[in-house]
Image 1 (cartoon, one colour):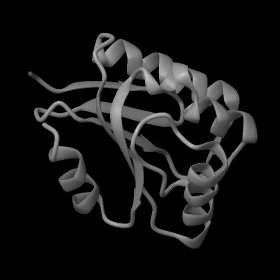
Image 2 (image 1 turned 90 degrees about the horizontal axis):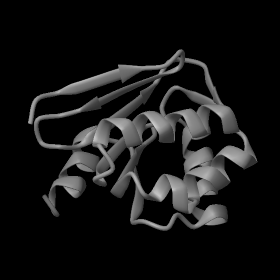
Image 3 (image 1 turned 30 degrees about the vertical axis):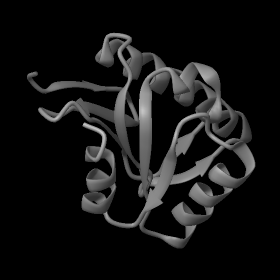
Image 4 (image 1 turned 180 degrees about the horizontal axis):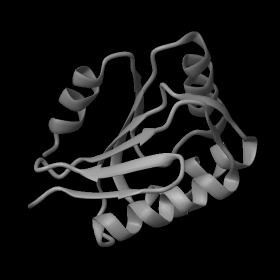
Length: 127
């Protein structure tokens, strides 16, 4: 499978040759419900409605609204991935990640990682 890429104003999406969806936010990103729904829409288009593992780099996210967290933990978003590695590297992104996991209970396996390679290793286990 060849690499596929898309971008919105705040987020880059890429499907790797390993068939993993990489999502990276631009510096200073505030994730609103609109951004969350757009992210799900773009992800769905890229995966062609066949869920795959997803690596989501949250290191540049400065805030995520409650509505956006609820969307990301919900059924519509869960339809685009089989499991999700959330990459964090700061106290703020760790708070956002832990709050998301604790308060929203994602429908698919989701784990926090401070290292992208460790997240990828975990995602590759089911490939």
